[in-house]
Length: 460
Image (cartoon, rainbow, N blue to C red; front, side, top):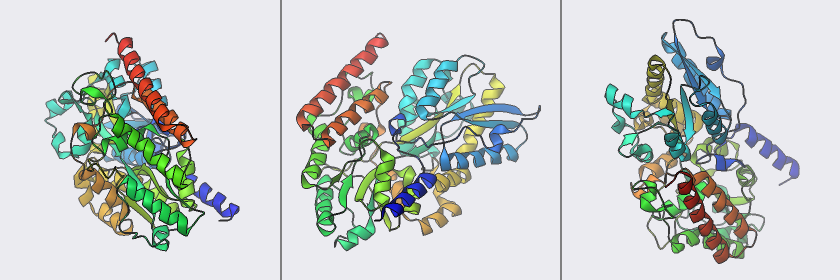
């Protein structure tokens, strides 16, 4: 492909993609941050009248997701005359959480805040939030109507501390045209590590300019590949039975991912993009690599920007294991304590509005994130979207066919962001030729040390 065309594709993709997993993807859970501006939509900038209860809503949605969210907030403000929600962009998930901890307990704190899933324990431990379970109970709100494989993550000690909001899981994207050209069935994508290795060899033999597979060095993807083979990230039931004291996966489970990459490197079919998710997606669009893993929230951007037919499939697992499924990524909405009750009550009303089928349908189609309320999939706007973009349905199928278990419920602990950094460094080391056994053991030792240090810091 000519250089000018490659540059144009990269520029187009940067403008339209939902930024779910970028070079800063470690800051999000599931790579959910999108590059955004400091400007708010009209709904966030307008002055509330004296009659309206103002709700300050901090979020980390940028790009297309921010545009869709601002439209939803504006519609809510125009739908009634009692509450004014001001949506304020705070940067990446990490940046938003850091700002919250800086102002928590002061008048500068927001009414509600969007926090990525791995910030759950940090928010609970802050002592500055009010569990939404209080509002669920007092309002007799039925949380069972929401997507079970999403609410499973956020239900802790039999209660909800926050309201699920934007959720996604990783999926495997593949170039259907490249599959067909290489004599592979584009409607039957590989499901296991071994099948991906074989498909990569066939594709590379047919087109030496194209690599078979790319895996971003991203801790969230490593966690998903563990869960899909039934492995726990941490012991004590992924931190849900008790505070973790060490990792929960076996050497066979953890090392399988490193060895899988090493096999493809040895075959010359692995595309190394390091931690840069944007470059990986651009390489896919430029037809430099045939398959890769990324968040389902990127689906619309990838499909719209690719000059070929994009396929979406479930993420793979070793052929020696059964598929377990995926862990939800993304973020939830937290009620900040210390505010007037009327202000928190107003925030609760807005949270409930966001869960309605109509709003969730708009959110799903406009961003690629899942609908928290599965009734949204019956809305006509979603049915119409699936007619023109049936790949979006695959992302939902993977989530809904996930086996509920400790593995797919996901881990909770406040050191997970640091743990992801450790895994990312280890993956990059292997990508650059490092020894698998030594690199893996170093990563395990560092993970266990990070868990020990986090527990010591809390006096546990």
